[in-house]
Image (spheres, rainbow, N blue to C red):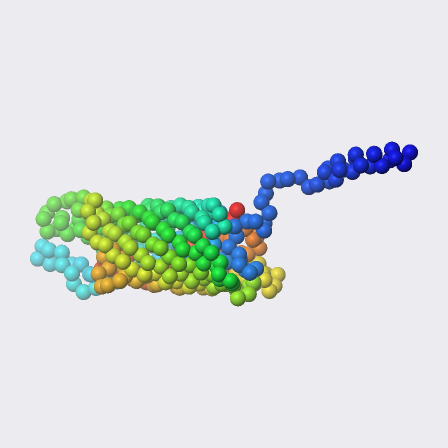
Length: 323
């Protein structure tokens, strides 16, 4: 009788143990997700700084901005359009960013970036002097990295092409006044910008609540119109960001971010590449490890187009998910 019980238990226990195993849902364990985490700190994404982490991720950014530009004041004198001093103009900006990246290995990821941008003057004089512009650009990027002790590093290479179509109203008005010809085509401008950028990115987390990321990159930009290169320019791009996650020290799932980025041409000619200063601060929800939702608000000093010296306030709503 005891022997029969032994055989019965030997036959039924493996089946019972298998039946008690949790079902496989196909969801990847959180510990295996490509979240940008280092020493317990999850880094918040920024509009200005690229992290070195190889990820499988999708990012959507919606950017809104308003600003002022200082440029020539135009008047009609003697049947000619002439510049008389300077004037202040206002403009609005709207942009969208889509990025998908896939991690092929622990050290390598690659992906695609699509950027759309549109700006226009927002009152009568500004529409005439600033005009309007629409651009739709796309780029390919690759990221190869390695961890050196407590610091995660990567070399990020991106190549992008951005066609831009603009309407410069003042050009058409000047021809209509000076030549007596209404030529809408004189107001239309079409250019293409090609950009190549290798960047070294590094991240360090002194504590689970606080992280630092820095970028140092080289830019080569080519400006073309009608298939002809009209400007080639080299430059540098330096950036730094710090973020703090209150969820690591309390029950509040909120993170804060501060960042700065400088884009500067090498040399005095800045037709293809102008100096741009960016400062931003952000707030993020950190309650879900694989999801980042946040608002980043910043100030930018740049040239909306030569010779308009411009500055503006930008706000980006961002959503990013990691697999």
